[in-house]
Amino acid sequence: MKNMKIKPPFFEVGPKAYFCGERAVELGREAQAASEETGVSVIYTPQLTDLALVSREVKGLYLCAQHMDPIPMGKGQGSILPEAVKAAGARCVMLNHAERPMTLENLCKAVGRAREIGLMSVVCASSCAEAAMLAELNPDILVVEPTELIGTGVTSDVELVRASTEAVKRVNPEIQVLQGAGISTPEDVYRTIFAGADATGSSSAICKAEDPAKMLREMLLAAQQAYRDRCGA
Image (cartoon, rainbow, N blue to C red; front, side, top):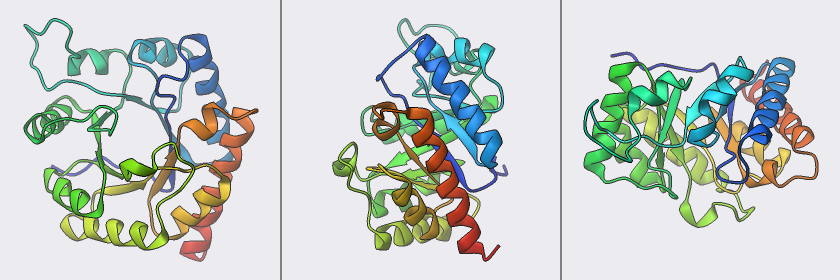
C-alpha cells in the first residue's frame, strides 16, 4: 500500500501534557493561522481527551493522537481503541515515543491497525540504527529523536540528521522523516530542514515560550525558508 504523505516541509507541534482543554484549542487555532500564513502543514498532537474538542474548533491541521493501542473493537477496558481515535477527529497517530514506548510486536500491530482504518502512522526512533530498523514496518512518517536530547535544547547534529534520513530513505524512499529532539529556536528548525529532513517539530520551546504563537510562527517561517534554500527555489 502506498504511504500517505504530507507536502514537505511540515512541522509537528506537541503539547504533550503541558496543558489541556481550552488552552489546547487556543494553540491549535494559533497553529492553524500560522500554517495558513506560511504554507507549512502542521501536525498537532494534543492530549487524547482533547482530540474531539480541537477537531470541532480547529480545521486545517493534521490532528494527531499521542498514542493508541493495537486492539480490535471489543474487550479492552482502559485501552485506546484505534477507531475511537479516528472518530475523535485524528488524521494520524504517534507511536513509540520515548515517553510512551511500545514493544516491537505491539508497534508492528499498531502500524497495521493505523493503515487498516486510514490513520497516518508517525513512528518514533531514538537512533539512526533504530530508524533504519523501524523503517521496515513502512510507517508513513518516521521521527528520529535521540532520547537523551528530548527537552534539553540540544539538537541532533547535522551529520546525524543526514545519516538517519538517508538510512530511512534507503529502506523506503516513500517514508517521510521528521527530525526532532531539542528543537528550541527558529535557527534549529532551519538547520534541521536544510540538512535534509522532511519535517521537524517542537514541544517545550513552543509551549513554555512567553509568546507561543510568535515562536510557532517564526519556526514555521524558518522551515519554509530552509526548504526553499535547500531546493534552490
